[in-house]
Length: 251
Image (cartoon, one colour):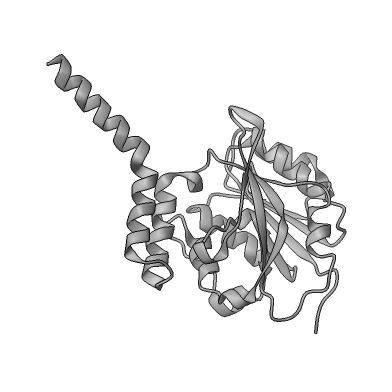
């Protein structure tokens, strides 16, 4: 049976990111969609993040502040507290594109077959140029997905379990999402989020893990994997070559 106006649980994790957290909270509490549960998981911040969370009172439905073992341990805590039919992971520094974003996502009924609704995004650097936005386009077949720019059914965790928690793996959300058959995805032609690109998951080694995982699943050929990894590393390689040439020239 298709559903209308489902409850959405938005989960934000934060650790000592007071200045960026405010952007995220404001974008959530200003949403015009009424059926939102907002959960904030703080990892034991000491920079005023906890006091900021407290200042919003009942606008944040549930929050905790305690040490965790990493990003996905914190997210899993949020998932365990969520009571919505759908989940969105929007971490400190990330924002929803505008106040009507969630309203647009759920304006039409959703068939039972759809498990993930995804869209496009904007990237920015909150530290240097917060007003400069660069458009990013989702492409499911190529794995161009951002967890901030999608919502998924909470029931998927009952089937697939929580996110993997390891210290060196920072693509547990990507592994979780890519294991879902593409027929259960629905694309919406709109930006869903504005994301800070100075975080851990924006680093080149995150992309390398994603491409390697897609290769293991047989979603991309070996040549594509090598090309993407080399492309990401190219600026560093060029810089190293130039430095070597300069040293050789001066010797």
